[in-house]
Image (tube, rainbow, N blue to C red; front, side, top):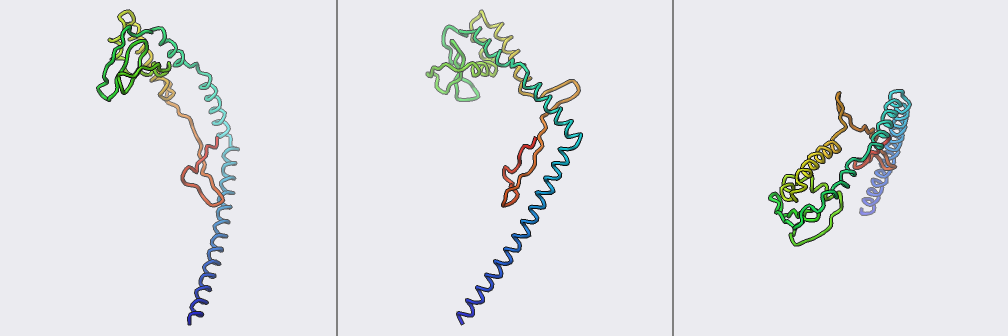
Length: 197
């Protein structure tokens, strides 16, 4: 009795394995067909006149953007003109956080008012722009007006650089064409998109 039951189980298992192999063959054929159709579609799109014009326009825009002058770097270098910001070290608690704003030879934010450090130019510039209203009344009198104007211009510059490219007739964003990738196993959902341009 046990041997006939075991024999039946083995036959069922072999049948399941055959069915699984058939399904795998069908799946592989379907996957190859999808990959073929996708490749054909992508080549058709890339071969089109409109894609060529868009790609040419994208390259021109990227070239123009990559050759724009870096005014933010120049502004960061100008911060040295105002040093020292104050001859005495002032520590101002920031109300929104548990941090302290330190104004002295330079400007920086620290979690502990006893900490002294020399931050890089970009950090000084960002701190200056972020806390301009708090910093301006606490610097030397001889630089207050110029520093207030510098902060206003720096803030406008940062808003302009962080925003989208704007024109009088509209806004522009960088176009990305994303195509799903396929592995030998199948379609990749998580992170399975590649930049194709």
